[in-house]
Length: 219
Image 1 (cartoon, rainbow, N blue to C red):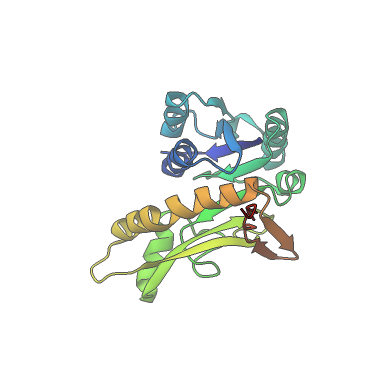
Image 2: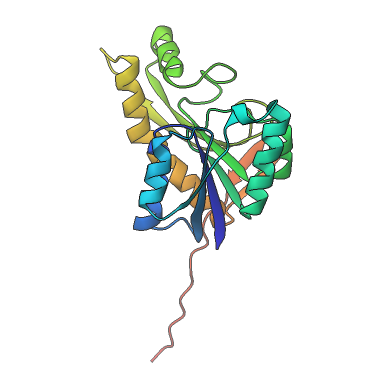
């Protein structure tokens, strides 16, 4: 079994998608063993508690700087023996020491088709506001490995979502979550736990599942 630790800051809808997937079809041998929040009031903590998942809170303002906070987070993840770390609406900045300690073991879901509408400052509704301003006809979501470069890690999965006439940022955000984020984030976690993701340079390749061969004796 692989230990999955989920990092959160808010409502935890992506966390709920992971919990639902684990309960329904499983996460490829992975199990959500801990949820760590940067916000003591995050509803995601309630979601975790309601499902019997251990929780921890690490508040940024309790630490003098990003380096100290990142060190504390790294230590917490090591204490939990995290095999996979999932950013699920985690809005607090961590530095490269966490990425280095868990290289190609941290994934994030971003609400656009990277490299569009990503990078520093692109989060939450702003992503969808900019997509609508640009007049794109298709948007979506991306799951990628977390690196020191914001939204720059190897892409694991992407799913496209149609932009419709009359969309507001809020409507588009909801559609992207329902049709893309909540589907590909659990799938990426499952693929990781099944050891089906290989990384070469900045390219992630999903290995096909080997078909089982059944040999029947001839009568």
